[in-house]
Image (tube, rainbow, N blue to C red; front, side, top):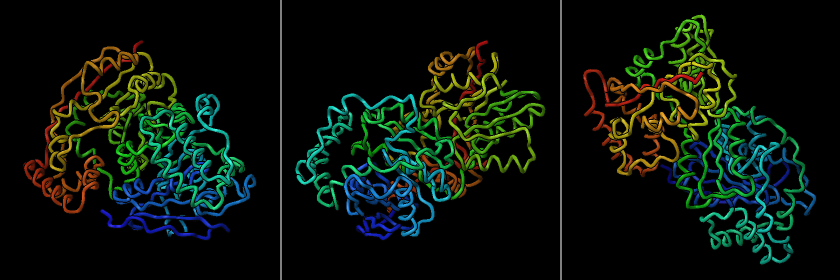
Length: 538
């Protein structure tokens, strides 16, 4: 937990220009670089938001782009720079602060800067987060018609009051009618923004007049873990732009902010901040899911009944244990493992190479949207890898297209949270706050009736459920189990949100819980799951 917040604004000489930069938090923590959109200074990444993220042990960096805030300004209508120069500025800020690699968060117009950084400088990008932006691809819906009617005529730049009114009205229009739009707070921010701008006339026009050179990079070439954040009320880039961006970047995840427009309203920070902390978390070592699920895996392998010539698709393959086992069974067939986690797939490829498996490939992608070759697989398996789809019917329909008619589907999914001691006892030892999942969680397929309805709608038949009642394993002793549990994002992040004293008390309770579950066979927690089997409709 950091004791440091803002280190104050600094003017840095970079690339022949001055850029105003402010940092928050401990420079030893993972760095997050915030880049805002057209005509927006760093103030639009609110101080309170930066402080909140910094308290999650992140080193926050925000800065004024050229022609905004206190940074270098150019004559109105004649920007002396292009898009690639703004991308170079971002790298220059990192260089000046001694940051070799950062998590990049880019909003609106600066999504193109994130694209340039991700494709041209992948070694400098730990992860990407695109907020309220777009691929710009043909066929996406235009801005909402009411947007233009909500934005007034251009103001006289010499009239500060008129400029403030104009920017506030524009922000309100861009909120898309969000119930969270706070006009009073927005006006106070805009007044500060206008007062500190070097040349507000240039701010209002120059980003729209610059050359967008380099913006034609391919989003599919991004290799960094990517989170797409989009408001469902966005009138500038309607929600299909967010879906298109998620589909364009391999393995990207989409977080839809209900009630947000082309903005990040303060009431939704409680959703955005935890998602960003999870996305940017650096784990010292990957959690060993294979050890945790060793008894489940024996039952799952038996249910899969993989044949020697089977062509197998493994969804949510993680580090690839089930994929490798399938490859060893399908000696005259082939196996494709799919996951969204680059670190997990890196481990999977390494282990497969070490074991000399040549009939196996791995793809980093989202199975809900990936265009698999049609009717190419005889069997789809997934060990706890299908519970997190944003649209389960669409996901399983897409998976079904990849299966030949009559092909089998074999899933292992958790039963309800209240039937899984590992999910309740560990969390209760860390916090009294009940779990409030945002979107699909590990238990989204727990209800057999609902899951059967999803699979039937996706084109599957002969759906059946087999009860699995075996424990999960966290290590041979409580010390090992403590380390293992805290590698899990869902549990480790609970401690990250506490002050040091409260965190230590929570650790003590967790140790006691693990001690109470230590047996002659290791640290075990009760669990219940379903093996779900089905066939693609002929």
